[in-house]
Image 1: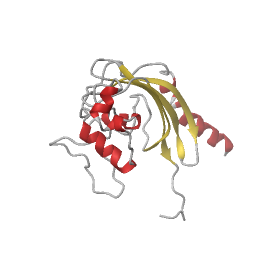
Image 2 (image 1 turned 180 degrees about the vertical axis):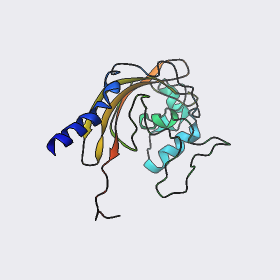
Image 3 (image 1 turned 90 degrees about the horizontal axis):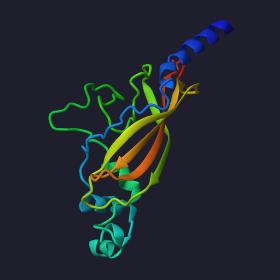
Image 4 (image 1 turned 90 degrees about the vertical axis):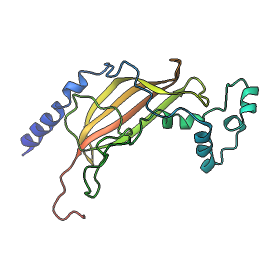
Length: 200
């Protein structure tokens, strides 16, 4: 019995070996098209409202210019909002199933996928780290550049078998300047089978 479990574990972990062999490779060396909207004052204002973020650099152009910025400044924490591709475009069908817990056919928040990954059905983010390098102001347009695989660590957890993957990406503005450098990690996995008697 123990030999069977050991062999099964080895087979499962071996499926991630092609990904491990690609650590250090950039899977998106070019610039992703800036499909998201440009940074706009109105969008910044709506971001500030629920936070009651009362700093005039983010809503008063005259104050922002007095401090050397070309326009109102986007809060750093809102940066990702303006790098995501649209969740839906006219003519698209995002959900092709009405099943409970159905997932969209495409999502901008699922993270980078390596084409060599074995099939998995579940994922969640485990870490997110950003180094902010330049201010972003209203009128800027952002895009992502690069998807370098930094690590792939297969692991069996309580939720299932999969691997922790860490990616590195730059965010650049329309002038090609790097405004932020980010690292993100995800656990992609296949859930353990439900046992009889488990709650629905």
